Amino acid sequence: MDGLRMTAQTLMIDADDTLWENNIYFERAIASFISFLNHRHYSAEQVRHKLNEVEHDCIATLGYGLHSFTAALVETFERLSVEPVTPGLHETIHGIARVIAEQPIELLKHVGPTLEALRERHRLLLVTKGDVAEQTGKVERSGLKPYFEAVEVVAEKNAQSYREIIARYRLEPGTTWMVGNSPKSDINPAIEAGLNAVYIPHAETWILERAELCTATPPQRLLQLERFQLLSDVF
Image (cartoon, rainbow, N blue to C red):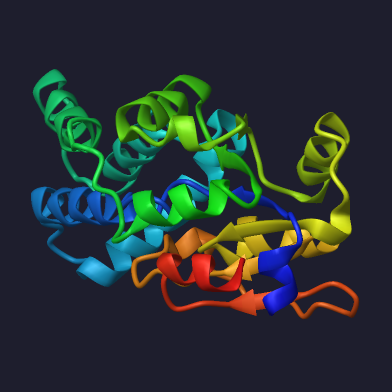
């Protein structure tokens, strides 16, 4: 891989659970919600399964982000609870979700120094999905924005959105890589769009982002690294 260090590449880098912790806060909120619901007949696993179904539907209409997640909590409560959702219960559920927004940005290990090293040799773009205000706010609070030429917040990470970014920045697919923790959003659609990719697994990747990793047909390349900091050893 010495050639990757010597030759300038474009690295499009994911944000949530690649640069900073994200899903752990949602998982804590979900645990609090399940405990609050305290269902008499459904197990915690059954409640979580129903929430996953509802959240999937909410994303289709509301997109990604805290607003969609909160709506999924409320709808799941309405479907499973024997009690009507009173204003007090409604506020409690919103409070469970609101805790997520109050969390400080917790960078993953060695992210700053690694980005510092990478930007000296390569072109860096931050590519994330979700609510624009929510995601750009996290980028600003992270302190990482100066490392990137640009920040792209897309509604969905699919092959078409990657092709649009390729065209917007006049990227050369053969020297462009998508780096992230999600097979569903970061890796598979990037490969479909003709890019290379670097998969960096996260132990708490969101269940709706998990998928079977695709394979890359040469000359495309798909790398897997255990930690973000290893990027500076490769590139």
